Length: 430
Image (cartoon, rainbow, N blue to C red; front, side, top):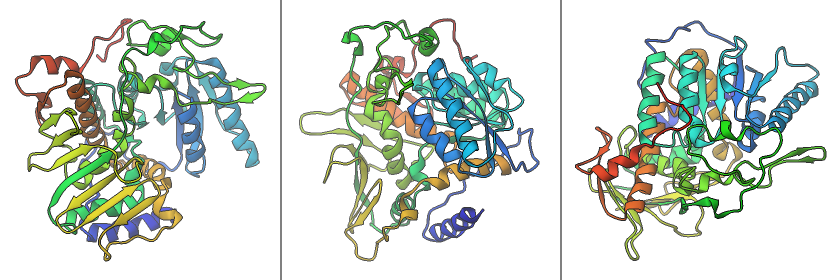
């Protein structure tokens, strides 16, 4: 593919600047070693986020969309109609297209090679582990998991089953973020004094002061809850849509903003921007050793083993992004932007410098070539872990010592109880 050739030259240039893209993991357990040109893709969870991913993946000639699954009937119907319309616009039709209420039926299909999982966070791990066991490769939306324990179990499942798992932290495939990380890693800023990361606040406790409403026809609310404790339905948690007249979601589903159902902006945007910060600091597959909650005017602060602080705070114009501050100057990067105080560090503002198409191409190429993608499961896990332990520090309102290798809090029983929760409704990861 033409874009793949551009990727090769870009990656080579950035590698020369000091940034390595080689994950270094093999697929010794993989059952599929032959090159597979066409990838038959199924979607699990077909809400608002999945619709955007569907549009992107259907632009790739190597992809054939063959299945979708969701617990909400009207969203299954919308998915089916959009896929058929997209193929009709090309003057063709899908060779195979089925929709399912139960994602396990999709995983059992011989017409699906890989899945895109865009379900709520509390379903990510169970669905992804089941996909691993079904020998399906996975594009998993960020944040990787809902709890730290889930991430540990998912890493094991991916490696034991030889699965390709790509995480939807797509900034890693954009030139502006790659350039920022490369310069920080190679020392262009000198010693890094601090990193500012703006993601936002949350999660809020107890979202269900909202008045419960009647579950709409066609939505299996118990299936949506899955491992969560019993919670009343509210349309903000699973926004309704209409097909006649056509009316799509009017808001992002609010489950992500609340403690009982999500990690708030700390995990929602942290999975992007904390990810970039740790990438630049060479902390992939590692992490901080201390987390200090907000105190007075001091923001939530992480410290790494070398003493570098990472502060979760708004800066400059207040958009979500990362600012690396070194002894020689700074680099600031966010979606669609790249700035530096050093005149010798610059990046021309072109569309190809700020788009994420390569992230989706990378996933398909990783399946075809049986290699790790640019954001493999271990990196998704280390990023998600940092986000989650930040929420735990804020909840307990005291500094916490974290062991990023053992992946637990040191001598802190109370904090360690926050690394997972008890699944309900007979659901387990075993």
